[in-house]
Length: 211
Image (cartoon, rainbow, N blue to C red; front, side, top):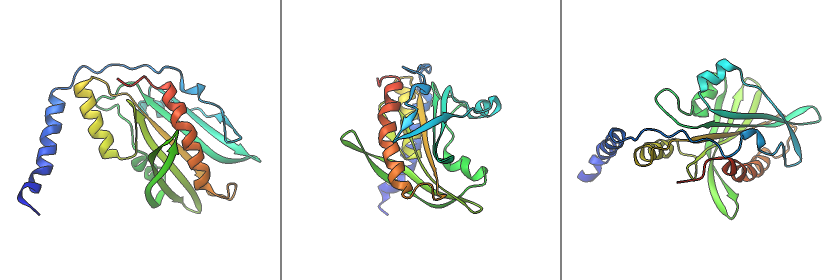
């Protein structure tokens, strides 16, 4: 390793500290439209809203959310969750599914990123295959806000620090798709990609306009 490369972590840490010290008063950014207005039909499936308890909402800290199960022949084909944070402050930030799912008994069998074409562009989305006993599930998730669609937790945290310091904005949404691998869907990845391609622009329409 070259001598100058040894200083990269320290430089990054120092830059983060500078940003933290210069953070502006955080703006509360309201949605342009409630998340419940996201289309209730996706890829021919009709969704049914699920309620998250007040205690779970308090722990998660989101400002608004929508949680829907989409069924076929009485079986859940997939679910969609969008949780929005109008501002992120100490103790009130997005919880990564990578940390939450193991606490719910799910174990990651594989992890990676999946390119998804969206409106003439391509975005990278987190892809996890999970197991909980005999149950298997495919999870796609990403972070969306302030004009970006991001999969990397490290990049999300850096952008949050920078934007909070420079613009006083920290609003963001977590979008998650879960497809149970129970035989109801023959190609879970193909379905998850189609859902993601539809959700990215629909979520964007409801988020505050980028600065």
